[in-house]
Image 1 (cartoon, helix red, strand yellow):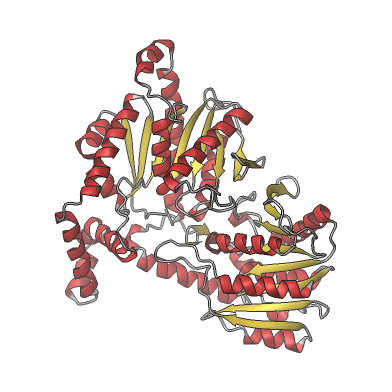
Image 2 (tube, each protein chain N blue to C red):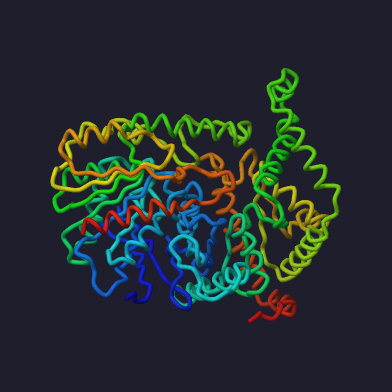
Length: 267
Length: 311
């Protein structure tokens, strides 16, 4: 039975590095014994995925999961600027969020759900932290260098289709769709490679691939070789992290249903 | 970092972030700035621009609130059937109520991009607490029948007329066959059709706009229209504002700032910086100007033109 809607926005974390989070309390009489932390993508991808991830959090809360959806440092409503952030800070943010959800609910078991760069960071965290029982990697960034190339290409295309002569280069800073890409962040992301990370064999994993998105054969092969129990789903869905012609924000219901169903099966 | 996540409204469901005043500049501290969703993008805004704006305004002494209308971002959908144009005005007013009750702000500047600018304008028409509005790419004309393709063609026409026409490289591409002639022809044809056909609904909207514009200026509400040079809404604004907008602008009763070479969402960092600079400067001027107007002699002269507050 559902209770009244209960989404709680709040800031957490320490001092100057406060993070914005939204806690979705379970909407069933009995909470499941596993909390979910949703790790969002970065930059422009965060803006385009927000609507879908909010709906994912609501659906998970509807079936009894306590859910924490948060903004990384320098992203969304959290403190800081994107060009001051970096991989180590963002990994710290996931740990802080896990601690926050645990202290809020008293639940030890955690499932991480990440999209794009958020998925890559979830994967790394799950390899290092205890108590993470399941991980969902939704169109994860497997290679940081490939990701940087991909977003640079997007920026070039944007400059072409968004009327190049409107743009004027005033400084040497690099940017992608209105977000800075500093040398520090670019270098740190470039060093990211999921195929060099050894995941824990004790946890379950789901890799979700939107139709037409990158091929995840190498990641799946890596997981298989490491003895990880994982499922792979390729679903008909658009790349929701990309800008659309009419500015609409896409919600891939088939992926949301699939992720919720898989997460339920693990708890 | 001292921002606070808040939930307000009746029932408490609107999610927002309050950025408290970071300094105690006279006049600013009693002034709240409410940022209204730019279209369906949540309160962070494209390029995170609303976060930057809220923090910059707070550093100048304003109290800023960015929040999500019902059904956008973190705020759940409304349970009644109130349509967006009405619910958005009601919710913008709830945001002002909230700041007044919890932060003691007495007067407000409304800031919005695209449809958020329309809500800011309409709310200013019916709430006497509003002293000014910062209207970014204000949609003075909304043609609901226009398709996505037609909208894209309008944007393309704006580019051809305002930039490509004056660019030698564009002419070279045209002559050497490096353009899509079909696309060019259909864009020009659509624009010609649009300009020659009399659209009564649009004429009525323009008339309403001028009426409300006059009323707001008579009430000494400070209005600043901020337009991207590459956005077709600038043409719409000039067209619907007509002579009145020209006169008011020339007489400095209304400000029109054009961010040169920028697109609709200010998707380059240098455009964002220019926008930020203009917003802070104009908000600052609004407070200074209002404190002059609100000196006792001015209050007596202007209070008679204030319209009744609508329920």
